[in-house]
Image (cartoon, rainbow, N blue to C red; front, side, top):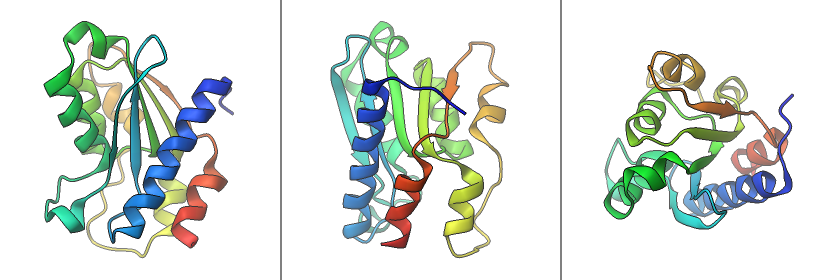
Length: 155
């Protein structure tokens, strides 16, 4: 069980709100928020795979594309990514390459895949496993608020 503070919970809930907005637009129900070391929200993003016609349009990828163009390495190193669901292998790699050193997610991959229709486009590789391969550590906290995050898929 992960213990998060009130700010972590607030930012995770914002990521879940963004996932609901993405779903309402016909996209995958995923959202992400980047928060600086000072607690300021630096960027937000939704999944836009369907509406953007981009297979890499995951919320975390979109978030880090925005952040990479706006912030320096030091700012990113002090930031935290909050994701409505556990990042896939592609997104976990992007978190690593961005230099962000903390990731917090709501819905675990195990529960997430259980909530979705089965497809051939699944790569079951947890973000912890991906991030553990890097020489620079990334703190991973999650899952947390799984029931709230999973409800978006059911609504």
